[in-house]
Image 1 (cartoon, rainbow, N blue to C red):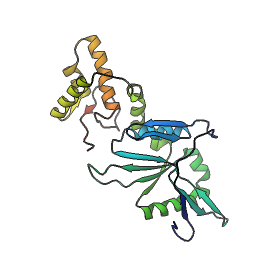
Image 2 (cartoon, one colour):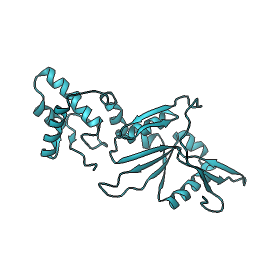
Image 3 (cartoon, one colour):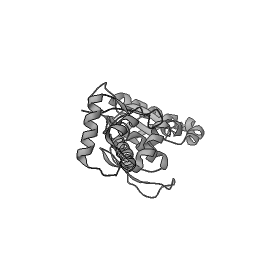
Image 4 (cartoon, rainbow, N blue to C red):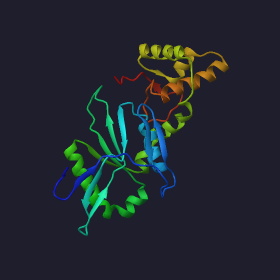
Amino acid sequence: MNINSRNKVCNLSRRKIGTTRRSVSGLYPLRGVGPVDFESTLERDFLIRLETDGMVLDVVSQPATIEFIGSNGQTYPYTPDYLVTYRAYPGPYRAPILVEVKPASELDEHLPEWKAKFRAAMTYCKEQGYVFHLRHEPRIRDQRWKNAMFLQRYRQMRFVPEESEWIIGNLRQMGTATFDHLLACHFFGEVDRAMGISHLWHLLATARMECDWSQLLSHASELWVPDHG
């Protein structure tokens, strides 16, 4: 498939994870999507942050290889890191994003020589109806990511399903409530309250509840039930 006379998409493929120069690689079990490949801690953190967005439908690792012409006239392949697609409901519509994850230090050092491949990616995205994003530390390891990291420990916890439904049902009726208010409504006594704290964080970690992810999570955080269709 030709993008233009100089750039074209070569193939669609998932990356093969092995030993990398960045030393950290593996599969991250992205909630609602399944295992997604990563080849650096920054890529892993991108996926952890992405997990807080309940509108994410799918994430494909190394979704396409794009050929571009370098400044020396030679043809080179370029494979962006991820393609992220979003649910159509509820709106508004969000275009899929083609993402390159790079440390800020590498972007500072190599951006002039990488401009050609990034332009090729933007041309490809324009034709596909995507948007091209560069992601580095400041745009990944923000407050949203810090909140997601805090909640990691609560993801795999197990609680009585009926109790979870009771909490969710009451929160839905209230519309919004603070973490402390929910805790006071549903859990009594020191031991029960300690369990309740973990239960509420678990419901947030598993997207049963929603919050303002740009704010530091605390017992004063406002919570509500998301509508993801």
